[in-house]
Image 1: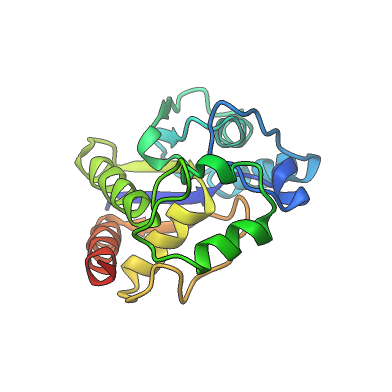
Image 2 (image 1 turned 90 degrees about the vertical axis):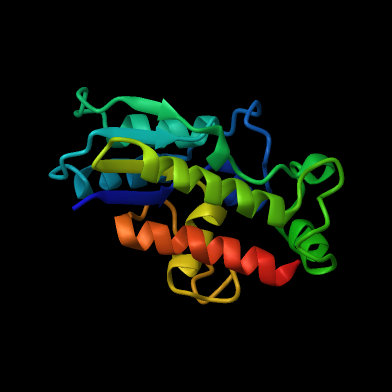
Length: 197
């Protein structure tokens, strides 16, 4: 059986400040709690025969992977930009409340000013998951962000909404998908985007 372990990065400084970041060149460090969450993640996956760890270009995702796999030098770390957080453009660094207000005031197909749309990000995540399915690895840890994990969970569940029923995704919690579940996630994400457009 193939296994894909999807997780959000550990708690970051901006999580605590309730601000958003979609620019991977901005170094947003983990908090001490985020580092501890990453260590616990490592304990939870310690006995899985991981063949690779895929992470985004964001330093908080790489730091989570490095801490979680500190004792697993045999697991290569691979960067996957397709799983990067949503490009927020002018809203980068904004308060979470301002981001949510903008998001709820516009259709999913409308890009954030200077950024990308939620639909475009969803298509990118579906492509990333397809790429994971096509790769040779049988067991992979994937460290990304709240939204791609949420979309995968809701897509696999067959929800018409990528924002529910799973919505608040905790930091550094592993969500397990077998190959069939990840294929359902891809199909569900693509279906939800097509319904929205």
